[in-house]
Amino acid sequence: MIGFGGIANALFHVVVDKRKWLTAEEYTMTFGLAQILPGASPINTSIMIADRFQGLRGIVCAIGGLLCVPLISLIALALIYDQFADVPEVRYGTIASVAAAAGLSFGVALKASFRVLRTLPAILLAVASFGAIGILRLPMIPTMIALMIVALTFSYMRRET
Image (cartoon, rainbow, N blue to C red; front, side, top):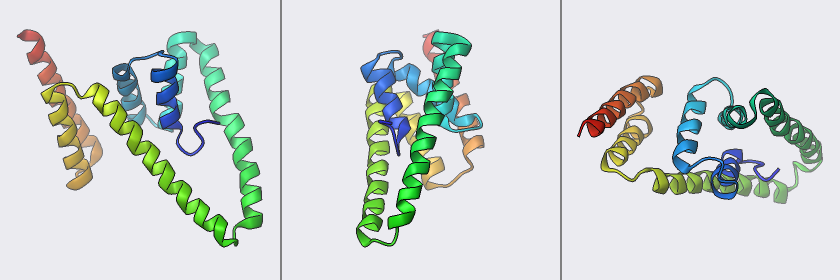
């Protein structure tokens, strides 16, 4: 329940900072892979981490823990919200919670980037990715494939020297 409204942020905190199951680099690579797979990224990430440490038993526990309790809580909150949706304070509180969730997401991205972006090629690829997808609005999948080729080329050239 600590991640309600922003489970990706809570997942990073628990996996990298608190439990130290993965390094920031490993988490970033795992979460990046989870984003291109079908389904919710945090659930995909949890499944990959659970499989790595506990196999099928871990996967079942991860899915159960990530879906059952939040689903029951969400249904209860929806029923309560339905009763008070017309109250102005409730509407303002809802708007404020959206801003808080956006701030949490930005904070985790910033925190992870300081740990991962240590070399000039990594920084340049991050800026190119943001510029191409976020600013120029180029299609994500072809852009990521092109940037992946560039990243692999950088990595290969770096190993050769």
